[in-house]
Length: 201
Image (cartoon, rainbow, N blue to C red; front, side):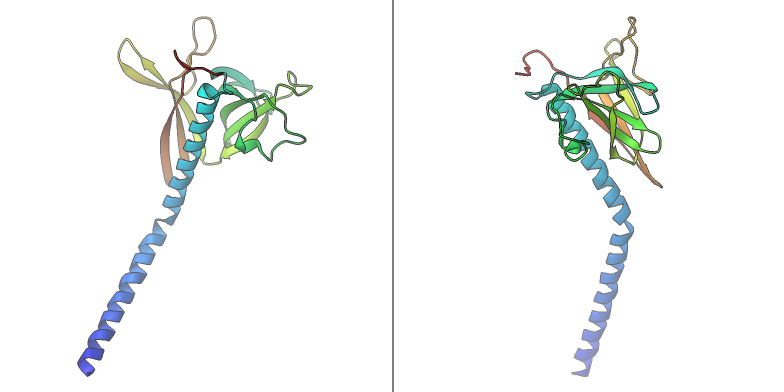
């Protein structure tokens, strides 16, 4: 009986040590897991939004164009129009939500990845700078991938490429770089294109 009790006590001690050591290991990776979960959620949201804008029934396509920010500076951003503005704007309107919302993605220093937006039905649409809604405070940079058909290779640019006429060439992919302390991640989002056979009706 004493031998059995001794063996049982030793087994319980070993099991206890194992459980606490596993809990410690699990806790050490908690920040990284939460960070990567956030990265996945942001990339999924951006991908879904771009697909709605380019291929959905309400979408009219995507374009690179210069957008003014709150300080008055104009920077090239990936712009599009959605009838309802999307889920992120549900509680962001100062008054009654309006349709035909013009949106664009940009990275602002100190804020992260932002969605800039305003409705085309606003009375001062042409004069007002777009509102800004933070999508992720952990995005520190956004760059653009272009595919060179001549050399069969990808080229990554910090700024969108300009065409000979001064307009911006449409990139094929968007790269988002996330940082939170020592945690870093880079993700690629394909930019959908309205091709032959696709329709916005």
